[in-house]
Length: 381
Image 1: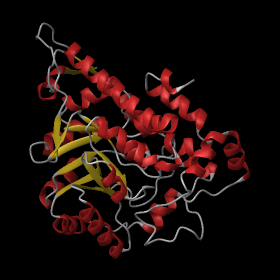
Image 2: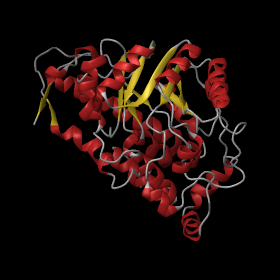
Image 3: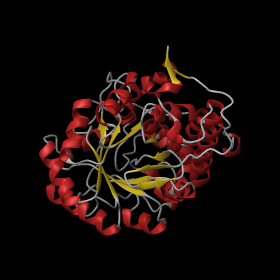
């Protein structure tokens, strides 16, 4: 199977599985514990139906949105994710270039494998810096200053990772940063020579945002241990308020699920929140993002921009979230599997499929712009 034959999420996932060593595929694909929340993130959309209107004179469809002051040509964006050069040797560069072709938001992670400065120079489309709050507060301040100097407009603080989720697939495979080779993983890498050649071409493993502050050369650590050992579990609203004051610009909290937390985000001066459960990778058994979206929009939707991610695999999923009041929808695995399957070409094709699906589905729904979507065109089973 080639990238040219991929026409949906399942196709990209299948091709990525063929091309990636199993530990790396499982890192993308897996969730926490029994992966109940991960599965519910997608199945939740099935409990909500679209109600189309006809004879509304839909011609052109305007897919543009404005999110935290950033004008996007499409209502979806590439959520910041870690370790992208493990999935494809061009990593964040491939994603940035593909996102730029659609003039949509994307971001570099604290655990990114390309520097935020290099990516900022590569493309000038809207970008965020996804930030984890470390125990080393000097590191936190340094990264904020660095992002500001690079010209990043939106800071996105992930707040649902004060300790690592129990990602059992990663435990079984021994997935770590840097990668720790075991007899089983070595066999997997031998079976996937195309990935190995690409990894060698990438120049090896690096975490440019952290390398000056954290020494990863001594021993490998799991992602769960990184969260548990490196991140500050006692972070509180006073810390967030201090960061917002220092940043002095658009500031977003990613990983909110409770409406009371969203209200606190308004109180401390956030300009946006992302309704997210980390792709089902942290607290298994928690509510799905889509199940919680309406409650949070009702609580704070008039006071800040509510974004959303979790389980998105179709254009109709994006439309349903937008109809509940999300200003834009984040894609995670929906571009990571295409990245692994085909680099920049894969990400571009996946984003084009999402765009085409949304435009077609908007016409079938009888809507000519994102602003026309509302809960009135939804019904729950």
